[in-house]
Length: 273
Image 1: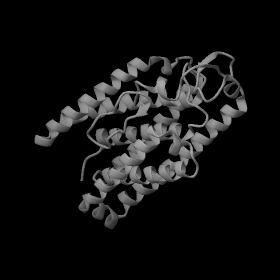
Image 2: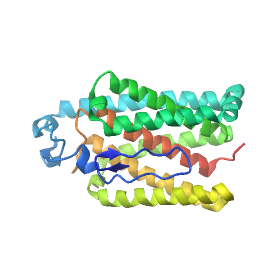
Image 3: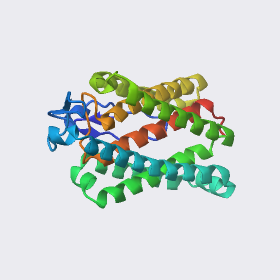
Image 4: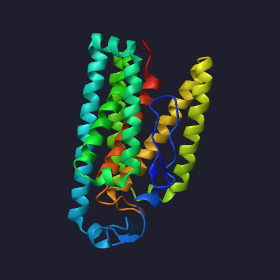
């Protein structure tokens, strides 16, 4: 997910998810204090005073989750149209060139927001880039959903919502610090990436049902863990935190985790039309 302070893009289907190895070097360096008075690692651009202020932390969290809510509403709306409106569903399945164009937009906007601090923190460019990213991600997810049974799409969305809410509540309550396990998440990311590449190569020659299901199950589990990791980075009351100015980064990571949980759950449950 992260490498040397860079968030590596996560391919939309059939490939892996890079490790969050460099999270601690990108937006989280130097000790600071959390609202509970304990030492935390925060960005060099912000001293301990900012994160010790509950108002700053709570405002940051509200901003991140407001953005995520808008992103998810847009994505759900696109999925609903692509799934329930038959002419639209037929169009997106018949015109895969648009899908690949949206993937190009997804890749460019993701890399820009992940790698370039200027555009990521400068309004309104950060909002414009995030909007383009969300629309591209929504189109890709809607296209994937359009090839599955409608009932499976609804069930997958419900399961994803329950999992996401449960993970968020768990991260608020638990004393387990996922941000201190960066090495473990590096390994998980590498496993996902390698498994995704192998699976994509094998399935391109011959469809192997059990291999696809194993990969989908692995992806759903790993991205649930990634969601917990990224959620705690946003909440900030752990060993590592995200800088208050990087609300776009927080929204980007959590939104992407949720979308990938949905796509993997859909692969586990759905029968392709």
